[in-house]
Length: 433
Image 1 (cartoon, rainbow, N blue to C red):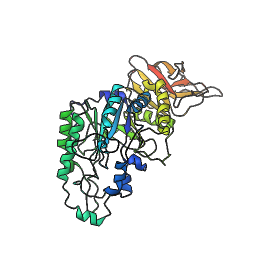
Image 2 (image 1 turned 90 degrees about the vertical axis):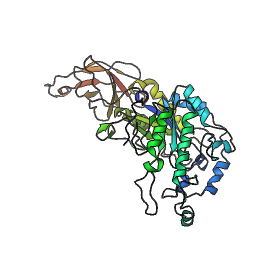
Image 3 (image 1 turned 135 degrees about the vertical axis):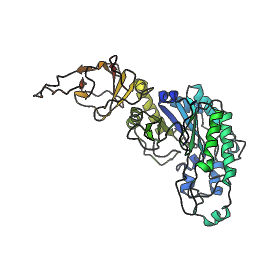
Image 4 (image 1 turned 60 degrees about the vertical axis):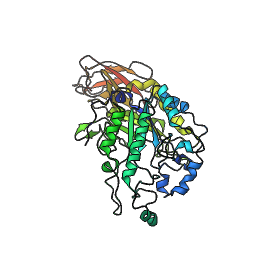
């Protein structure tokens, strides 16, 4: 397994903690998930209707970038090409690109400019799979997998030719758009075997050579882990890990990639949107376990974020406006938080995120004598602290003591924020994270 490059700088990444994923392409016209070509076994000639009608007349990348910035996001990753093979930039290596649609213009360059001008780092997602390319083999994930006649007619496809196309397009992406901070390949599946075909992976992509080219063209770039040779960041998808992600027993840099509603691409009829409070909790949960969160939006066919996405981004942004210092640059704490809570920590500041608001008091094990001051982060109001004699017995209105515990006195009324946070200033010498 390839080791992380010594030149890779992940410090900015773990400082940022929160990014925007964008899945956009001609599948947004179908509006039935970005895997619609695969799911519905759509042949190229029928899928062509989406290419022939792509015209995002409401597309304004400055609006997208502004929404991301206001949500508190510090970087973005966009699908330059998804599995259907359609490209968002004016590639020299294919005609299957945005500049040949009715829209007729590159959409990637203005997007990069808009986000970069607002201080967000730039990331490119690029599919290793390509269901449109004439040399990509027909395997068990291909949309034409059930058409035996088609499979037989295309059995001599040469993945070596496709591989050079993959490498060539990657070179274009890394030489035409200035500094690229993240290269996010997707995905390898060599473990799959359908009997008549096998999945693709490391050898098919020539992953070592591909990764070496990426690092040569963009020194310091962050490379994800989906080439089957390791990478700089591990990418759990659509679940929250139980703890800090590990590889070979060692903690690694990681990022949870999550959707708003279960679909990456625009899905008109999927209304299963996660509420703002849940999304905020997912972000907190990631940071509390040493990770980042990459939250996806799938713009529609006219080039807009749908209202449900904007509502949630703005809701997260309002919470981040008041609480971002419990996220940026923070990581896991060695301390164990109370039930229904998460800790994040940065230096001598420990942040207690209360997923459930307790009545009257919250008890923090291991913090007796270690906290200088406590306050609610949303308004900076003081929170009272008690260190109860551990030998004290409970009686009537008297609480029992607990060895090593610090007790905080809380107001009865929960602060009017998605997740309340208490900022604890640790005493000199008490820092531990």
